[in-house]
Image (cartoon, rainbow, N blue to C red; front, side, top):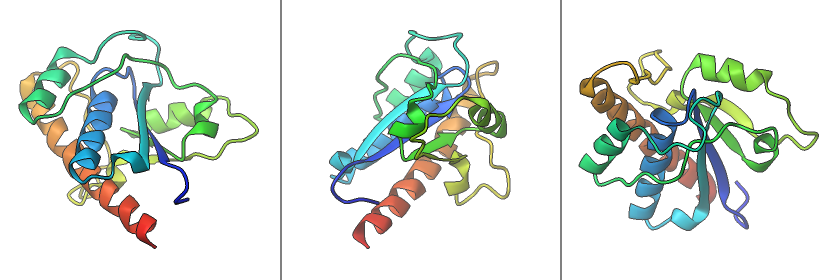
Amino acid sequence: MESNRPVRLLFVCLGNICRSPLAEGVFLHLAREAGVEGLFEVDSAGTGAWHVGEAPDPRSAEVAIQHGVKLRGRARSVQAADFATFDLILGMDSDNIRNLERLPKTDTTRARVMLFREFDPESDGDLSVPDPYYGGADGFDRMFDIIHRSCTALLRKLLEAHDR
């Protein structure tokens, strides 16, 4: 991690209204609580364009509020330039990763693409953050727990790398 510039993280799901905006919000919340928000630039995007311009799903916003997290921004699609802008692009499931791999890249691609849940200490080999879009409130609660654990571990790992 270069100490002279923020680490740039992009959280990615399918439509950018449920999982990825929640991951963005939770990561920023944890970084703010730790007093290290300035070390990171964080955004989220979707591999599909169905919800471009929309606010986060109200159910994601509600579970965030229940945990003191505020979601910001509007849905957008991943762009080729994101591969040059971001250091780490974190897909919520293997479909997201496949979609990211199919996207055109720039000549200055720098981003490492990986599954977000690789950071979840309780993943037990299940590296997908389940998409709660078509389910009930319990799916959003489960999603929050997974995202919170994964963001906590990701932040810890990034801070350890920063201190080296």
